[in-house]
Image 1 (cartoon, helix red, strand yellow):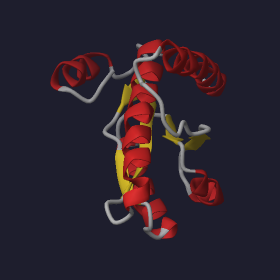
Image 2 (image 1 turned 135 degrees about the vertical axis):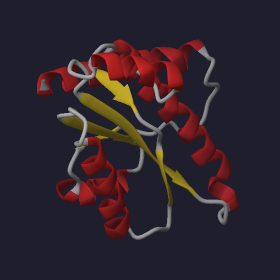
Image 3 (image 1 turned 30 degrees about the vertical axis):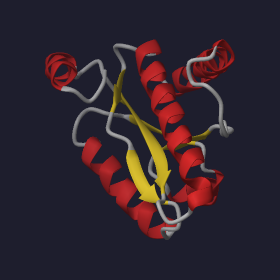
Length: 152
């Protein structure tokens, strides 16, 4: 399920079956010209990953809005904010939270997060609509879906 009106209405009717949250952690920074395109591209690709994982695991997962943060922000304070989001989601019957990111710096904070961090090797550039990128995303989604299912 996605974070939209129709899916949230469906969620309210079947929330006892939907026990997993999928949230993308996406860096944002306008002050570095060299990284603008890369960060925007990774945002697009990570959103596709999250949507495809949610679609693959339909009936058990809810994709919540992505968590955007300044790339230069203090990870400890961002960890506290993310944990607040996770605590709020735990008020619903969500038992599992998976945080998707291309940003390897989150690995240092992994133990402090109240969810399961899934770091993915980042794609730097390419045509999102190309057969190769779509196949890569599909292959990764299948592997991540299996990993998430192992937590159930």
